[in-house]
Each structure stands twice: as structure tokens, then as C-alpha cells.
Length: 153
Image (cartoon, rainbow, N blue to C red):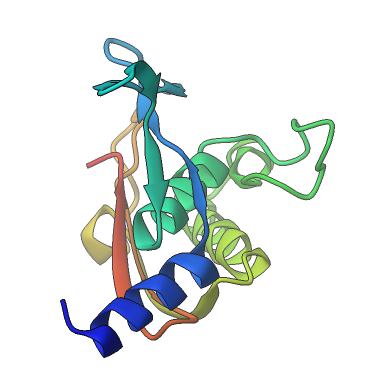
């Protein structure tokens, strides 16, 4: 890695942050747990940085109920209100899309939202009794990188 590439990578990591790796809990629909890795000094917490850290942070925010974090009540996703109060299935989907956009706008590391697709972008009512919605988000970070997050896929 040349010096300009290394400097760009260090800047990317500084702007997008570092954190502990939180992997989805196997066998559960929702939930994450800290990840442990073996290292030269024994078992340690796995870490993520840069675009991986931002992606993980947004995934956690999109699977956390808005206001449920007592230390940061602005954190989380407000999709439950759309599901509970709206009666038209197409309007539910659009309110969910707006809720996703609000999560992305609250994160200062996201420069621009490119696309938010629900179930592949179809604008039809979900199947009766459906409790699952695939969400694909494409966005640009403050470092100029473009990233995609798939939830429920």
C-alpha cells in the first residue's frame, strides 16, 4: 500500500469510526451480540472500522425501536408507528421508507442517500399476514464511498 492510499485509508477510518463487532445472534430473528476472536494474547473482542463500522451502526439503528435507548432517545427506527397506525398497506411501506431515510439523515457520516428499496422496489401491497420486509439501502459516506445495506434479505 502506497503512502497516499494508506493516508486515505486512515482518514476513512477516522471519519467513519471504530467499534466493537456485533454479529447477528444465530437462531434469532433480531438481536446482536459482541463477537469474540482468538488472538496472540488469547480471546479478545473483535473490532470493526471504517465503512464496516458505519454499516454495522446503521444496521443496529434500523433494528432498534426509536426511543428505546434511555441514554439516546433520538436513536433508532420509527417504523413501528407506521405499522401500528397506518391502515393502507402501500402507505405503510412509504412511511417505512421515510423512517429509514430519517435514520440515515441522523447519522453525520452519511453524506447522501442514493436509494431506498423495499422488497425490490415494487409498489404493491405485501401479502396478507406478511411479517417480513426486505430493505436495501444505498448511500454515500462523507469519505465519498458508496455502500449498500441489505436488511431482511
